[in-house]
Length: 205
Image (cartoon, rainbow, N blue to C red; front, side):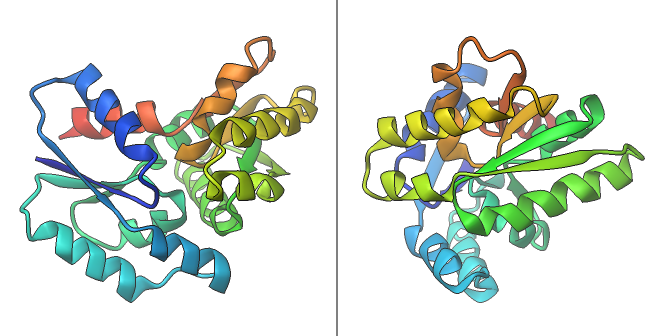
């Protein structure tokens, strides 16, 4: 069984469909803890003890592996055995292929974590990168209020300004993936973590 830890229930259906598209015979179980992300945004840092407590609870079900779909808790995931962060595979792809990277985020708690991963990966691959930030935190309220379409539309509008500045646009959070579907005529590649991450993690196991 593959366990997923989400910080919003909106991700359950998306990731269930992703796994089924790869292998319909893989059993899954989804866990949701919205509070840990809310606290991270409010406090400006993650609560390691709360995260570990949630992971320990999930491990009581003896999953083959755990995938954390919240980028904010990527570094926390790195500290625990058999817990995979959803964004590492796509960041490895981005750094290997591109130089100027547009980093788009809506949860301010994600900015530092995603930046650290990009820099760490560039050092590992001995690749020079330039990060151009696109702060979409003003749109986070739409996600919190459950207005996903408005959330994605506003993100897409903000991304348009990056087209001539970057080689690739990285949607740092799984919740942002729908913005790609609005920017069908965007000239640069737009990437996100869910599909690429799940495929690479499952194939690796």
